[in-house]
Length: 414
Image (cartoon, rainbow, N blue to C red):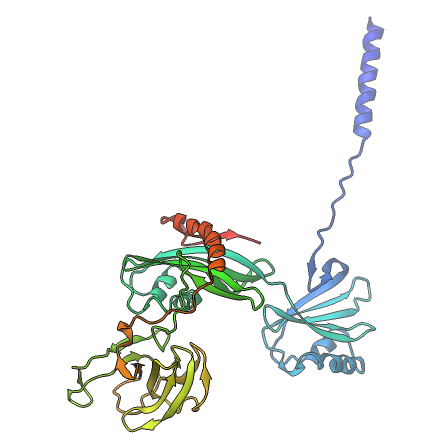
């Protein structure tokens, strides 16, 4: 019996020894890091920024490259970018051989977050301008107007560029200087990123909903010409948001005086008909043509100052007064939204503004009271495609939660 127990103990000790003798080897793989088209694991890496007094040649010299090779490298680099204009504070990277020699092989300079210059420093000398991959990330945002659209965007910590985008999309339908408290919006848009996390700017708004004075305005982006890559915005009924005329000749301005045949004009000190609509804005603000047409007058008078008249067709003409300087030449064709001059104070005026005058069938009328013509309607075939495309987007806009904890929300990473 004692022998049996002794034998069992020996077996136990032997098996334990076998297990302890086993050695587990865990292989840890080095994470592969790629940037600028190179696998950085294969190089010694030096990252730095341009400092005051640095020059391209001096940076190379500091990194163990010397003349006459520096001269040869400079000659190649000059073919791609102006080496005299490397800017203080901009980053550069030097990739060197991963051995005891630590020989510089590649110089990479970033003049901005997207572009970068690659200069080969090895046996083969060359230089090339490249761009980082830009990724579009989709967001949704919403807000309620308390005072103005720009202030609301600022309170929500959203890009001010979104205000510009919205004003352009709804330029034919909503006067953004006459918004009311309680008006609200919902938007779906994309922003541009490099290196997955570095924001480099707004791409554009793709779809939007704006409630103004209780009336809903949908704006759904839809491609109307695949060959030209043309996109336009339509409402939930398939109606083009674009009109033949913009509501205002100045983006982000206020109406300082309306069309009024019985207005008392301060400059004259008496009742004198005001045939125009005054849009006040700082001197130098661009004035844009409210519709496509041809410049038929461009000149100066004592009362009007510098002015431009645009003929749009046999029915409509517009005029823009008090420009800072002479506008476009007679005969120039302009598209809707093209700059035709700048806000000034020439002629009889007490402050910087543009007096916008509007003719219909040869008679001056109030443009804000006109039922202006719409843009060319979408074809019946394309309209059916649009309505099918639009429905899920409308549902998405309608279902956006009004009590979002964050007014800006990441929804997709392509």
